[in-house]
Length: 76
Image 1 (tube, rainbow, N blue to C red):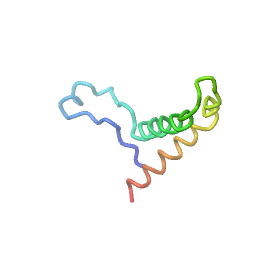
Image 2 (image 1 turned 180 degrees about the horizontal axis):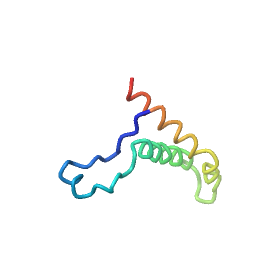
Image 3 (image 1 turned 45 degrees about the vertical axis):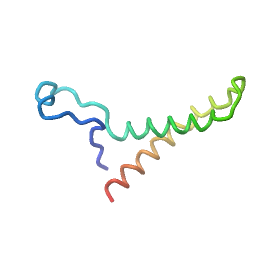
């Protein structure tokens, strides 16, 4: 699976920052997916209701599954 940089550097910057690899596209997609998952879990909940915190049990795994599917769709 191809995992290019999420924010590739221009050639001028690349020459100056050869050690900088940046965030991979897979991590970027996973972070966006997790943001949506968590936001969806707290929508309409009262401040006292902290059940949305249980999302930490499964949201990282699901977020990367979504990211992998997005990368696969890009290759199609």
